[in-house]
Length: 432
Image (cartoon, rainbow, N blue to C red):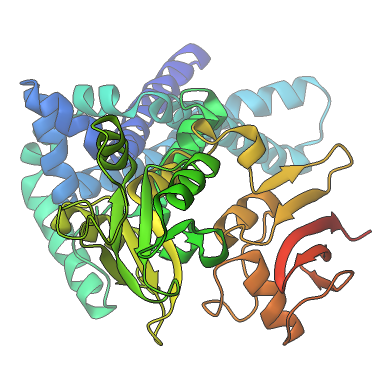
């Protein structure tokens, strides 16, 4: 066989091997969500690809039979077709007969191997990875035809492979369950490519965190709650509302733990415009004071949304196991947690990055926010706290004081300000 015929035969084997390589990688990399969209639009080839992905046994068998058969043929052809030409070239170069046979065989093997690795494996698989859905749909027809053509052989190998899989306890079908980790990985990849904005990625992460964050991470804490007493006179009520304007006010008895209900600021303003009294005790039977939703402090934000929806409310009081009020939460607080910096003004950010790379954080900063800012995956005594202040208390085993420090995962947490046992500000710097 002359050199041209040998090269043409090897090129044909490379093309056949590249066909099977592309068919294999395209089918494995094709995204089921995109294929389902194409199938819903009437693309029958997408339906065929989905069917193969659900039961890939025959398809994979055909691919492996083709690849291995071509590999064996390539070895035989390369040895018989290229070795004589390499031997002639080496003889012309003055190589002795005693080394001629081994060296020409080695060069033939190396040439065929390089050609197949580059042109029949690496390049086809890279092409298949770039556009897997389109290529999988284009090749599924010929591959199904080959499956039918070699059905007896394919059936034999498939049954043998199924038996070995059962023997070793391997799964028989592909697991296509999509977890929230998969979705977050996709959004992270989209952010790197520019298809997803970083703020949009943050929103998606925050949505999944609703199942893990407790209401304490988004509530207005007890000491910050503006509440009205039943016995407050109208002058005091007007002054308090004017100094601390809110949409909703908690109504209590002698103390904040004696919860009676809540009032809407709009209802109070309406009574003022109608020149009616706004004294809470005098208006007790007028419907101004409404029944308040009370929830435990261990609820997650996702459970809180369910409570709001079932009660048709957007305001709730949070109590601990001793029935003491620990804070209040609104629907807007939950949604602000989801939207993050897109809706929160700069002066309300709980953790701020400084020019030197350190951070200044509020004591009530939720742990998930710290995880993202500091890139800390694991925290000590996880589950015993929800905020930065709780982390410091657990680590110090006491109420933090000014200048107290804690070091964790290469970060130094220094308490900068404490307001009546409340951790107000914490400086977080990288440990050199």
